[in-house]
Image (cartoon, rainbow, N blue to C red; front, side):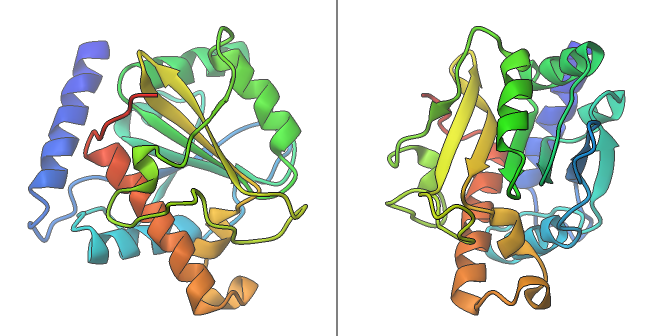
Length: 225
């Protein structure tokens, strides 16, 4: 499975480079999980981000997103998984094993706290790489300096507890494989405008940062700590 998954990723990344084709070359997925948290929140966000990426950074992503369970082998079909929610998160031992294998073989997980999942997701992410702590990414990290420049790091989209937005990472072999965005709520900013009534400037900041994340992941950018 390891070699076949790497081969799939190579083909996907070739598809990114050769994205002038009208036929979408790959899909992204929302991660389903157990524990009672609303993994299905922000139903329009990932599709809107994909549309924005296709129009601004020349990706060729299928605008129809999938929903895939953390314990399923289907996660290996996607180079990028997006996870969000407001509440509890519980990963079983088998699910942790499956997700860890996915990440070690080239996959990427973006976790966006939709307000209320922080204490739960930190506990579960610790199970993925027990020897690691979440590392806050410095403003100089390349994920903030792709197509769009964010010299002060993550934009603040929703207030939540009025804390500064932070981006944390987990790494495998010095490569960023998990991005956790906290006190930011990018996903709300990606949603249809009428959902949260965010102004155009706020939504654009969220979409630009999201495009940076997608570009960073799909072009195999500099992922060093």
